[in-house]
Amino acid sequence: MTTLENLYYSSIAPHEYEVVRGSEYDITAKPVIRHKQELSATLTDQQNVILQKIKDNTQRL
Image (cartoon, rainbow, N blue to C red; front, side, top):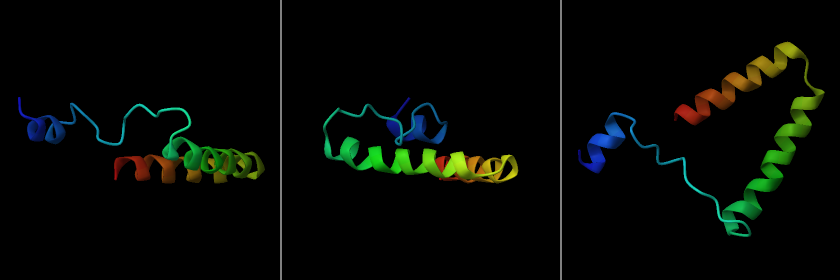
């Protein structure tokens, strides 16, 4: 199967890759993850459900 076919059939996902510790991506992602966790801790259960839906939809993009 070609790379294009693998992408089409979701055998591979370009957003899933190994993050190297200390890389620019790692350094940038850490505060984003921390802020999401801090926000989630302040939300009601219903608001957390909505936030999770947003995360799921973003991942599907």
